[in-house]
Amino acid sequence: MELREVLNYRNPARVAFGWYAWTVFLALGLPTALAVAVLPGLHARRRLARAAARCFFALCGIRVRLLDAELLPHGPCIVVANHASYLDGVVLTAALPADFGFVIKQEMRRLPIAHLLLRRIGSEFVERVDRRRSASDARRLLKAAAGGQALAFFPEGTFLHARGLGPFHSGAFVTAARAGLPVAPVLIRGARAVLPPGARLPRPGISIDVRVLLSKNAGGADGPAARRLRDEVRQIMLAELGEPDLLPKPQLETIPDRSA
Image (cartoon, rainbow, N blue to C red; front, side, top):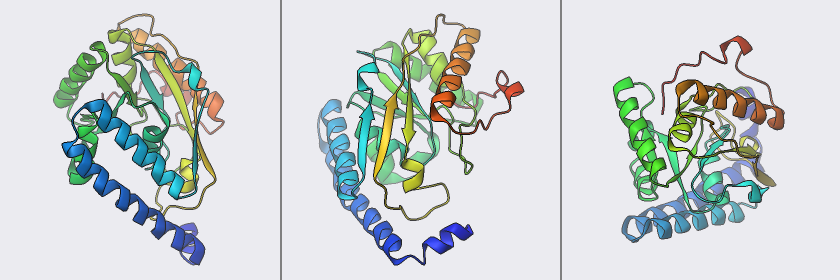
């Protein structure tokens, strides 16, 4: 545990808020998981999950704002967002319309309640290590996208302790290029301050902003087009985010694609 986190545990108000936030999360999450397990209709289940996520932040006194929402494409698209906190998925669930299926790492299957909730709201689980299973997952994502499913990716794959934007995997951009869907970059600001990497308890926060940037088209269905789109979108997000670049420039074209 970092010294900063140790010091936070000596702040009674922060500790009280942290335990309160987790209590609210469980009090809302367990009934929501049970409800979506039996509720018919994917869109109805997504609306319920969105309402629960928004209620969680409201009860914690945290305002979640979707900025420049008019820039979201009308119809199916691929959303790509930066990843800096365990809260990011909950943030996007609260902020985005109830039309998106989230692309999530396979490891989340190990959490039974979370897996049930995520599966029932149409999330897609992807393998990041086994290349054979990763290829199969990529085909499944392409089929979903080509069938009109809007998908939300965290192209960094995971978040790092260091503040900044990490390397992007190509899965989201390959899916967009082959399915002919626009890519909508989205920036999440404020989630790291509420629950930073390594922290066990959430911290009080005023607001979390989700800002939509101008969408980009792949301009081709081949691998080079998808990689160009990946690097272009990443540079746009990096410039708007205003955080350090955690990828050395010479490596921009050589990121190993270990996830869909």
